[in-house]
Amino acid sequence: MNIKASQRAASIKPSPTLAVTARAARMRAEGHDVISFSAGEPDFDTPEHIKAAAVQALKDGFTKYTDVGGTPELRQAIIAKFRRENRLEYTDRQILVSCGCKHSLYNMMQALLNPDDEVIIPAPYWTSYPDMVKLAGGEPVIIKTGIDRNFKISKGQLAGAITDKTRLIILNSPSNPTGVSYSSGELAVLGGVLLEHPEIIIATDDIYEHILWNQTPFTNIVNACPELYERTLVFNGVSKAYSMTGWRIGYVAGPETLVTAMKNIQSQSTSNPTSIAQVAAQAALEGDQSYITESTRIFKERHDFINDALNRIDGVRAPAADGTFYIFPDMEETIDRLDGIKDDVQLAEYLLEKAGIAVVPGSAFGAPGCIRISFATSMENLEEGVRRLKKALK
Image (cartoon, rainbow, N blue to C red; front, top):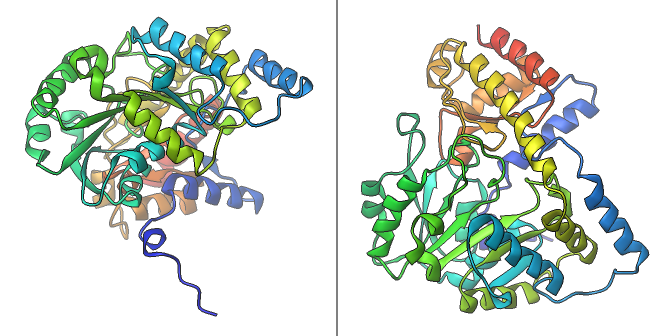
């Protein structure tokens, strides 16, 4: 029997970041010495008080369905977080808790987009954005940036990308994969363009909000341009800030009408997020926040090491990141110099086979010629990885 997948499924490619991580894991299982610079998750354990809250929830038998949009207690903790940390006010009906920030974004695409709606996505972008748009019948409109502009879009680029079909723009700051963030002034300039187009919805993906060192305090486009509050969705979660990637809790705040539509979508797909994970997320938001300060300090130390080391290698240009645990070097000169290497995909294959280093090609993020290196690993691995990289690129 010849079973064919739907055209929708056939048009979507697997996540490149997950594919590289999985391949590196397989090679290690086969006995190969591989250092992975591909993982998009902190290498620290979830803080103990968060795990203890989940264990207590299990003991208390909190293992049944919850409200589709999250427990009332967690939604209140999210409202308090936005008020305390972001100076943003929301009501309970403006909050939706989902199975990770990715799920929240997917819900938005399904609830908002109609066929042929255009979605502006600055590149480099998180790999899932364009495919999520396509799954909802929309059309991604990519604004390309480069290292010379520090991977940020300009006022002119944004204005030039807007058409009468533009329905949504997605901003991610600090950025996966570049680690760069927009300043308040830069966001205000972009906000000024969007104020001239009241039909456009704005999505700000703030998942790396707390892993930030060069652009403090954290600012998103609603902080920089409060007039956009009524049509901006703010996405966040506990995965990156509290090393809770596997707990799968993300959330969104925004216009009640759209959040309600997203909740309806969720009710017919996953229903509620895991009850136990919601209790853990509440503990993360309401409890001791010192973990964030310490983990960000460590990420900054690692960043400074890898940034300096990369820029000492001929043919590598690595702009400093403002946050996250990624750095995004331009490898064009290196690719041109190496025999048999024509692009960033072949370079990534070469580094994996020749040096035992797993990186993600920049083309997966809409930026050919670059690679993404995650420094969510030990300093020992970073030092050894740099040694191997230098040797392989000689």
